[in-house]
Length: 173
Image 1 (tube, helix red, strand yellow):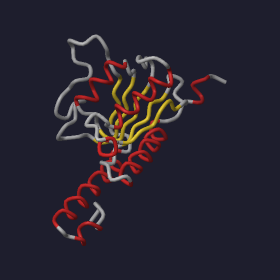
Image 2: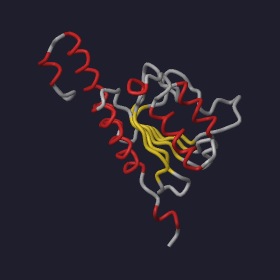
Image 3: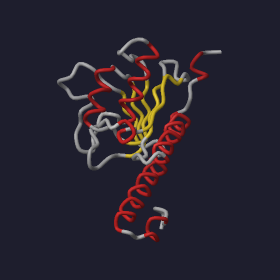
Image 4: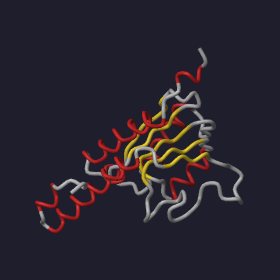
């Protein structure tokens, strides 16, 4: 049987990243999660969630943490042939790290209209002046990942405002 027969689907991989996003939320972080998948399309090299508050580190976005862990796993800062799966469109910092790591493929769920650097606000990846190209797939489980973020920020705003009813209302209402 060919090795490709064991590749995980983008939906399956995004569900793993979504588990990481939920872990971030449980820890009081913005609920974004990421995983790095080996070139075989099946082996998970790393998984992470946002850790900026826990680590007191503004660079501890889930993408950066996952890239660091994958690089340590492979003993190589180049992650050639690997796929990064993330529940939210990466920001400029994370997009730069994706390029430097030589990630082959990026799969993300929801667009980020405020800080997205893969087409929403900026287009850092695949800029014609750069020497590396990334295959970008967007929209995988976008509604589910987007709803998690909307609910999180709705609850956060309601908590700040002291509105307990709004803090418990799901995004679908």
